[in-house]
Amino acid sequence: MSHPELSVVVPAFNEAGNVGHLVDEVAAVLRDRLAFEMVFVNDGSKDGTLAELKAAQARHPELRVLEHLAQSGQSTALRSGIKAARGAWIATLDGDGQNDPADIPKLLAERAKAPAEVKCFAGWRTTRRDDAGKRISSTIANAVRSRLLRDATPDTGCGLKLFEREAFLDLPYFDHMHRYIPALMQRAGWRTVSVPVNHRPRGAGASKYTNLGRLLVAFADLQGVAWLIRRSKRTGVREWRGDTATN
Image (tube, rainbow, N blue to C red; front, side, top):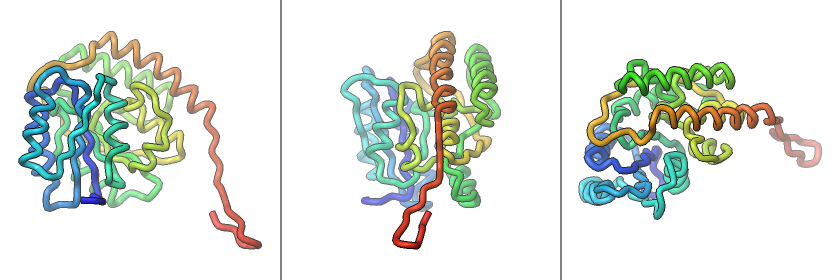
């Protein structure tokens, strides 16, 4: 398959017990709906994640498996998968299975009726299936981010998103940038839309982030993103051919 319409990119670090079932779910949702591929990025896992993905390839020819030779984090894994992807549009999911692949068609339906300047459709977990500590830390982080960046995105941390590949690759890259994709898209001049989606309890394993660690990293990154937005400049461009101009 040289040019699928959609590439589903999933980063995974120590997600044995989750990724195989997630591959099956994505395939069941999208097969016969549109031309797609799945790009799972094993981010240096130390468990059976890679073996589980290799076994899933026998069931699903749409599955591509990439492996980081050293664990590099979720943003880097996403970027590796998106750079390797062949679809013009990207859907992303977390590797823990908490995002519901059944919501991907909902994001595609929103794209079908949206104007061309909307380049990112962000999942909004209206009912979280996490422990109280994680919900509280996310609420604080979202409130602070929204006040500082004014990105009108109620849940920027949701791993379920749909966006144009070319627009994403034009964004500035840094570790943990995946938390700020809507704000960075807006900085680039595009519109974003938040879409209510399902959220599920984790099936196996444990979260890779601590609440305190997430807040500390988020605060430092938030200052950097705010600086990028303040220093951004955009302008239209036209090309002249003799006396004729094109935008």
